[in-house]
Amino acid sequence: MLGSMKEGLRTIVGAVLIALFLRSFGYEPFNIPSESMLPRLLVGDYLFVAKWPYGYSRYSFPMGPPIFEGRIGGSAPERGDIAVFKTPSDNRTDFIKRVIGLPGDIIQMRGGTLYLNGDAVPKRRVADFVVPQSPNMACLKGEVFVDANGERMCRYMRFEETLPGGRTYFVLDSDPMSAGDDTAPFVVPEGHYFMMGDNRDNSSDSRFSFAEGGISFVPAENLVGRAEIMFFSTDGSASWVMPWTWVSAARWERIGRLF
Image (cartoon, rainbow, N blue to C red; front, top):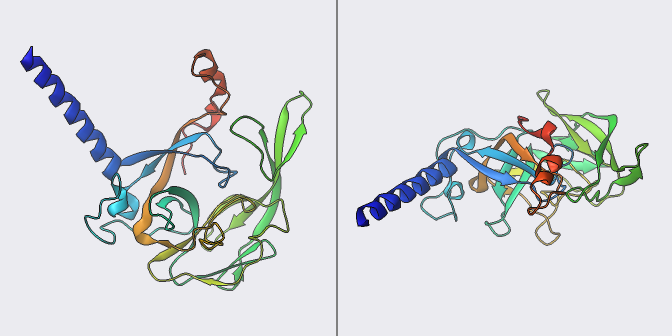
């Protein structure tokens, strides 16, 4: 009996150690709690973040133990990457944003247009982003309407931005007077990055200081990893006590999407 208990304990400890190793050095799961990265990420999305692309820092590990400073291995983020990081305001809370500015870059918003090193980033109007309203889609800053089938929908003005090098992505910008549409120039310090949410009207990001509820510049050490693949998504309408609703609540078309 005692031998069986010891064997079971060894199995549990081994499984925990393997999970911690994979979480620290391989992939870590995250879920999306806000609308700041619409339209690419919805509330209720679950994704794996790869740890190795940017190398490792203390924040690669659970609870961020101060075992060393800086980063070891990996490569620097590229403009347009979707990255998870510890917000520098407390070095604990996980944020996910798009990398916009690299060290030495000059970033500015003018009339809702992103300027990078003095040049306007091309911004092209495309079809509106329309998604069903749900418990996980509050439609903050968007327009709610009822479609022909009687379903409540949410609509945002959508644009395509193209970064130097040709990388493209979609942003939402429905409010021409939002607080982050006009800023002073930001010079990204060495060893830091400038992060922005794709939902430009509803994102606390590097455009805003800590006092303004933003995150300012993000130190390289605070990077956790790069978004890689979405493994689940739910609209929030499921009930844990009604398992049959888990299937209808899943956003099946989003599962498996790569970043």
